[in-house]
Length: 230
Ligand SMILES: NC(=O)c1ccc[n+]([C@@H]2O[C@H](COP(=O)([O-])OP(=O)(O)OC[C@H]3O[C@@H](n4cnc5c(N)ncnc54)[C@H](OP(=O)(O)O)[C@@H]3O)[C@@H](O)[C@H]2O)c1
Image 1 (cartoon, rainbow, N blue to C red):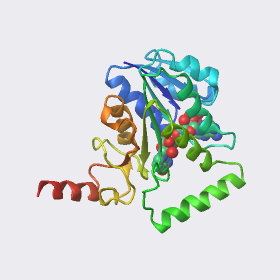
Image 2: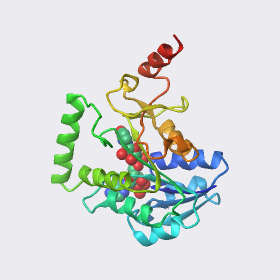
Image 3: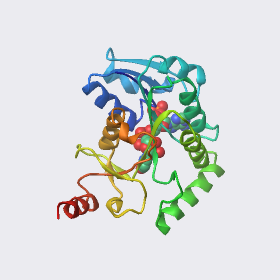
Image 4: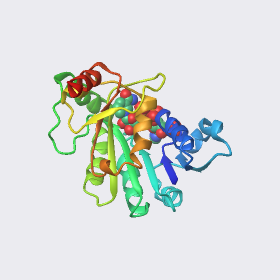
């Protein structure tokens, strides 16, 4: 399988590169020119297309011939970075390619997610402040996902909980809606978020789903597993 990783130089991106190489995939990465050196550890094992991830020409070349595209959607800047990136991937990836996008729990596919008052407040305040100082545009990440959800492509949008570093604990568990008890712990190892993204490439049950994930060793995931066994 030939896989393109858009946003390969970030923390999530580099974990995805490692998982994809471990699976024997051929890996193509897109990252900003100034970040290419962050991929030095993979020299000779991956092909890099330097450039902004919303540069349509860069994406067109990078995704050519790829069976899967893993895209890190980030809201940085106020230049439609997320929606431009998502649109380019949707426009240029092969129609039968598996497309897997990352975002956070704050994205809702069907409006059925139930958020705590604290998380609503955090997203609201961060969103307004970030836009005010032109640092980030959360609404653009929402727009990116709206376009993905409306597309006929074979997509999955993986919604990450709060993240932490550390050794892998295994494939995260998931649920359709934030607020479901299994997700209550709201914590996933970043390495396992990446594992879920790469795993999704070959899991057709996740097509047209927006799984909200949580670490498989967290208390809420373990409590759910215990109830399933009873
Ligand atoms: N952080 C969290 O707590 C959290 C929680 C839930 C979900 N998520 C999701 O997880 C994914 C990865 O997020 P992350 O926080 O873990 O970060 P990350 O993996 O380190 O990725 C950050 C990405 O943003 C790029 N970037 C940074 N500054 C930029 C700028 N000014 N302009 C354009 N690109 C820029 C980085 O590229 P360079 O390498 O070129 O800098 C990198 O590809 C995202 O989809 C995010 O929504 C994160």
